[in-house]
Image (cartoon, rainbow, N blue to C red; front, side):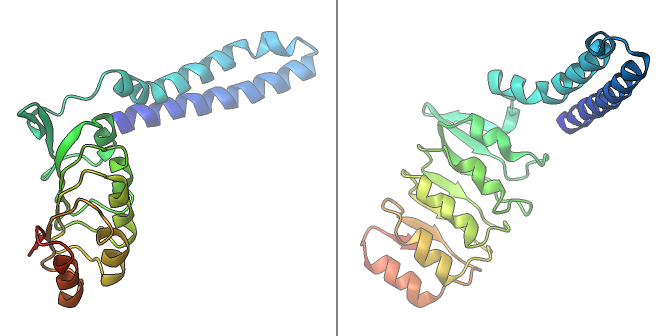
Length: 199
């Protein structure tokens, strides 16, 4: 829905720009005032741009209702986007107070991870069965409260684990089944803190 409104708005704006160029050329050949001749095309272009960007502006002011995907548990926001039937994960950024986020979906990628950067209260994250690579793990360093992380069947390697997971100060529980993280590195992480657990 949002994508079609955006596309429709851009189409109107493109028509307005074409109309503007033609009106300016016509005004020049007729020696009439350019401003007077281009008033209507400028208005059409402005309307198109407004239509295209109004959904983005509106959702910043009035957050999208996520219905069953969102819950409040003991006063904390939980988002369960596993099974999410949409493609736009930018809605996550509009809920910076999220404490638990589950998004174990195959379409979640390194690009999707950018939407998590402002989640300073996030304690639990499920990224199982996603397409996250070592590069996507870099966002974890911007999640200071993260304690529990599930990465089952995610294509990460020792390099990403060593660079982005091991240095995380609060991380205590990991699920690494089906990853390329070596048992040796996992045991090294566990040995650094007796409170840590990994599967």
